[in-house]
Amino acid sequence: MRLPPLLHAADNMLLRRVFSPRIEVRPRRSIVSFTFDDIPASAASLGARILEDRGARGTFYIAGGLISRADSGFANVPDLRRLSESGHELGCHTFCHRGLRTMSASDAAADLEANARFFNDALGLERPSNFAYPFNKGTLSGLGSLRSRYRSARGGRCGINRGATPAYQLSAVEIAQPEANQLDDWLDDAVENPGWLIYFTHDVSENPGPYGSRPETLDRLVAGALERGHEVLTVDAALDRLGVGS
Ligand SMILES: [Zn+2]
Image 1 (cartoon, rainbow, N blue to C red):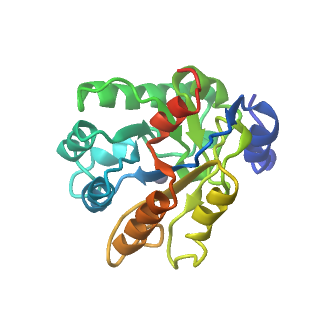
Image 2: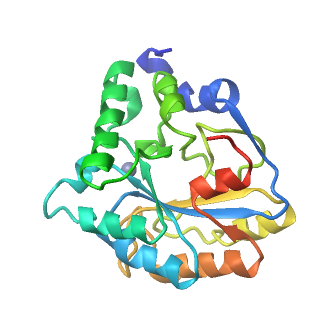
């Protein structure tokens, strides 16, 4: 289904409430996933190292078109190979990094295939299993393409995933600047009431951009998740843990 432009704002809500297939999120112990979009070089280096130093791994949503730009500040192909070899998950974030709702369904399908080819040809990897919407903008017109290719799609609605959850509009909590002072409260909330908490950010730097994280914040959240007894898993491993079929 393709909505007229005036109804685009309803896309996320309709996906979340009506059209997306559901997964059951009822873990005995909360799951926390740390995810990075695009991805800046600092996410692949410092972000990954913070997770690895705590024995954890993250999900990095890759737009091949950004990675292919020279001198762009984005991670490069060797960075991505190292992430994969270290046990991190590489997900799809479109190839061109345009919002799916700006594309026709056939253009969206072609773009997702271009990113799958990037995974195969440049990285030597299988096609990615999970997706994150550029700009967190979900779209009904792309839902068929997403369902046939990925287990999940992460949106930007703030919250913890619990109970019957729309697989193609997963909620997430953003780590951005200026930093929200209740970022840690979500970890406490997940102690009280188990669920799946997904954080997302972009660069990881002492001087982060508006959509990035300071390293101490990321480290505090990873350590805080583990100290509270949460499992820190990639998105793909979380879906396995929740018993979601491939
Ligand atoms: Zn993005």
